[in-house]
Length: 130
Image: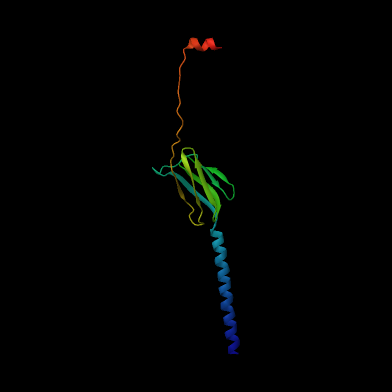
């Protein structure tokens, strides 16, 4: 009879380990889906970047940052988040499944235009052309 009790206890322990393992897998999967409330900031002065475009490249969801650079986006573990804005280099992150409030730094870039030459004409010359 003692051998049967030992086998039953051994089976209960094994079953408990399996159930615990399955529970942990489910909890980690739940923690890796959700949303983020992030912020895009200027890398040089840490001020928010307004009206930047924020794209979840995996789900194709698109949003814009507010006046302070804040944004809301639905994400899953491993999603690529891309940030674009005029006057800033394209940047982004891959969501780690943990950080619900990421701060993404955008590096300012200058756009160099070609030379512009401005010429004036007298009003008399303009009316003669027509």
